[in-house]
Length: 307
Image 1: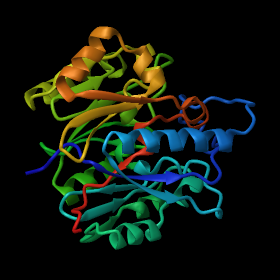
Image 2: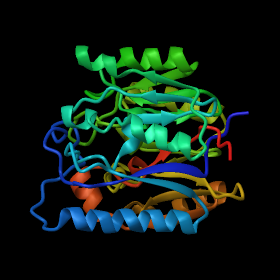
Image 3: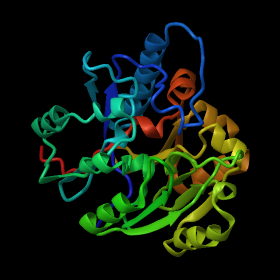
Image 4: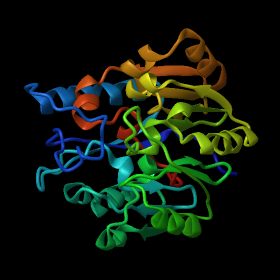
């Protein structure tokens, strides 16, 4: 039986966190800033997330970023790798050339040495040679229980690569268009929606009007209660949350403080009733310069743990 959430995760502690000029054109959540000490402040925020998750009972595998080559977005590993409960690991094609450097086989080796079973590595990165991209569980929001992959098309999410992922891992696709309030494609699906065991957070307003009913039907027909968020809440990263478990199997929802503060009391209560406690950490530097939030920092490790 497939599970939607896990208590094992991977996080990469950054060595050179900064705004990435190569990703700015497609990531409109990323903002220019002249702030000083960005690397050190990002490290402090990263460590705060790790400490909060470990305190909540999550097994956090922290691996240090390498000093060379320079990788400003290494803090977001869920874009280059995903782990599945049959031991399959998928590597993904990335739009920005400097993000392709984040794919590290030594990370998989270290997880294997720690007791995680890796049966097979499916490498989709060859699509980069024909400018086709699929940035992991940023581009896709996976309903692992029902084997559905939700994906909004963008320069970073190509339908051809989606098709190969679906075929290789036996997923069905729910593909749609989604735009922000300026009409630009939303770069990653996981900033507009999150799928948990019993709930789905969705910015319905961002989805193309003729496709909203289909997306909502797919979610509701698989037993998910909808927590609808506004476009403004999406800009506060309220869509970029993630359901995890603790080691006792109790679910929780992790998000940034900005996301939490944007939610209405009724939305928070609905989430708590459906998924348990809310774990929140303030990460303004990472959100501002990186254009991603807590969910983007976490690669869930569903690979079987053998120790």
